[in-house]
Image 1: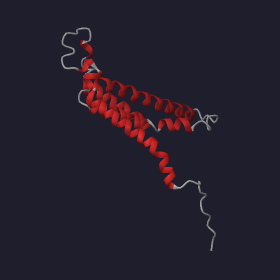
Image 2 (image 1 turned 30 degrees about the vertical axis):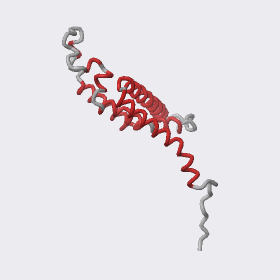
Image 3 (image 1 turned 45 degrees about the horizontal axis):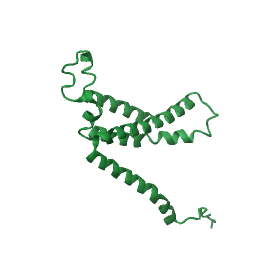
Length: 155
């Protein structure tokens, strides 16, 4: 018979660990409820905040991904102790993408955030007539989806 060792205990029961997560989970739920309430009552104020917050998280995760990429491409050994932080930042990218999804799905988001996407916005503007096809909402969202998908695939 072999003597199997039991894994060391952390000293905290499982219920204490769950209680430690109650506050962060509650704050996430409160934030999501506030965002939904804001989208229903004042979308012109909530949508820019979601856009800034989503892109803030996305650029933070991109910076972590960029750091990891440069360190691996150059075979740098000095950053071995630091590598876990940028890797954790890069893991936030799908969450940032989830924050940006309501901007695409919410019907009035396009017209609220981007005045050039309103119907008839280019009717009298001759100086931007060459940009009409480039700024069409379908083409803009297709470019966003391709770039976001590429970054997520790269991550």
